[in-house]
Amino acid sequence: MDSKVVQAHNMWGNQIEVGATYDFSEYTVGEDEIIRFAEQWDPQWFHIDSDAADEGPYGGLIASGVQTIAIFQRLSVVAAFRHWHVIAGRRLRDVRFLRPLRPGTTVSGHLRVTEVDNDKPGRTLVVVQGELIGDGKPLFTSISEVYVRSSIES
Amino acid sequence: MDSKVVQAHNMWGNQIEVGATYDFSEYTVGEDEIIRFAEQWDPQWFHIDSDAADEGPYGGLIASGVQTIAIFQRLSVVAAFRHWHVIAGRRLRDVRFLRPLRPGTTVSGHLRVTEVDNDKPGRTLVVVQGELIGDGKPLFTSISEVYVRSSIES
Image (cartoon, rainbow over all chains, first blue to last red; front, side, top):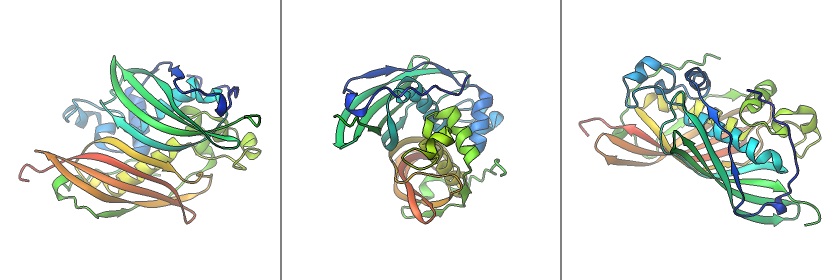
């Protein structure tokens, strides 16, 4: 994986429209990566101890919810945010973990703009709804608020 | 840093009480770690390009919000979740990024139980409110829902 993403700032906040949808590329998460991530950030046994997890409620390891958010963010940056003049994320209104993310799953999904508020000169608050799908089923949904720079002419 | 955390499952969901508070240990985030994390999960220029960030709105690099969540999760596991029979996280109701997290900042904070619902036999839904503080100021707050196994006798 080439982890560096070219930045192409070609869209101002006031040019973003409600209903705009961005389809994600795919990301496949392996067992080693799940364990490595969770050992650092979420060291609970069902994320890091494969043998114990096999005997646990999920019948195997599952990825940390934080890693699910991280995958979602990467796919969001590649599909949408690198094309916007993003200032910063402000808030996650709602994040739901609907199904466990298991090793070997290929996830994809999309992002949809649901609100655009040109809240002060030079700055737009953009609300996006996101979804991750794995093996044909929804794994994860989120609603988040992102500040995007507006053009001076707006 | 020893990234492996001993699991000590000594608390059932029905033993957790509203108002219980868990103080976090400290975590210091460095510039290299901010860049490495963001190159993989959140490759936006203000997280990965130090020179550009110096000229940007924050006057320097800031950590990815996803990394802030990851640090919060690690501190939560060490302080609280490893002492509970956690089944899984279900939802983040609200996550707010109040101030940028900058290289060299030492963060700490706490977790407080705000709701406990023994929603079905064997399972308790625990709602926790969390906060991260850096250099004496609030950086991050969250409200999240975690399923915890209940004892059979409850």
